[in-house]
Image (cartoon, rainbow, N blue to C red; front, side, top):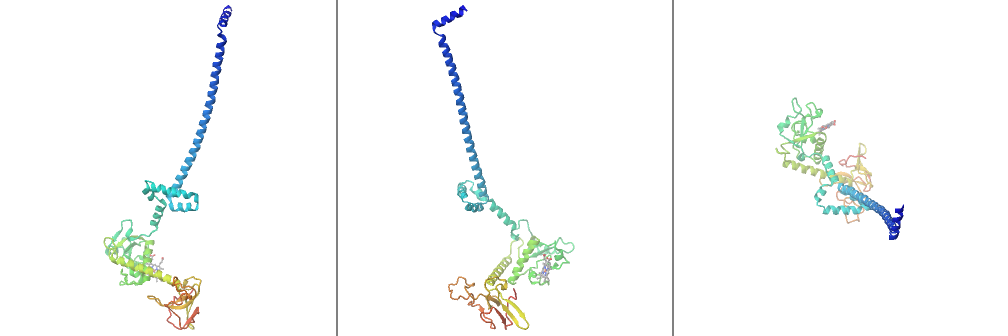
Length: 381
Ligand code: HEM
């Protein structure tokens, strides 16, 4: 006790006691203050960090969404450019994308790759290839070239390897129809040979069962074209027959090329006949023992539906058989739609290839003819 009093007294004398305690308190307080300040700053920093993170996340979401959208739209554009451009022209907000994608493709180092990868077009082309009927020259598999002797074996007789026939030099396997082409079939004479001509002439004698088709009519060439279409559709094409149409190496002969011309000519002619029928539709026609022949026009005579009736006239076109035609008798010409002389106003009545039936009034739509030679379509609506 005495010691304590002593030291207090010493301390009082030196004036240190109070100073030390204030200092300590100050130090302590200062330490507390700075740690709470630190805490506050850390919280603020964390908050700020979180904010930054949030905004970064938001930016990322925007960025990735935009990238995803662009990828998808570019995918769609690459897949089918035409469809995309059509869609973009209807939905205008997409229009700038077309420009953007075009630019990308223009400057892209992968331009060749991109050009080859219009997948929709490629797909379409593949579909087209599938639907195009097989042509003899472009068969993808190894085709066989038959000699006449070889083909003869395929006649369906006892021990024959199958039933094949040739049409315009193209050989088909018709084994699945022995009821037609087998030895007991009604058309067995076509088996093991090329008898193209008989398909349109109906001459089934040995002299008629030949492959030469020169000098046939246009409708015969069209008939042959239809037959070959039937064989490609219903039977298997197996190769070519060396001879009139193809050489031993399978290449076409000059005769084959000539045939193509005959066929093309026939088709063009058939087309112009069709066009001519629209302008000069055939008349209806009937024959009666008492009254003779009558020809008449209606809005669908000759199978041509139209807004006008027309009047019957004899029609003479070079290279065509004379026939009865219903002729437009008012307004503009159908035959010469671009004619500058509009003063006629009588349809096609002024056409020089027409002639009035003697027994017929010029404006009659129905005529009973005295001329028994009149040829018409014999059609009746
Ligand atoms: C130029 C004259 C003719 C030729 C070249 C000819 C040729 C043929 C041929 C090759 C076939 C088999 C078709 C196939 O493989 O699918 C066939 C079938 C047939 N022909 Fe003829 N034909 C002619 C005239 C006729 C005539 C005038 C008649 C009737 C009176 C007729 C009635 C038939 C019938 C009913 C079939 C079966 C059709 C079927 O079941 O699908 N053909 N003809």
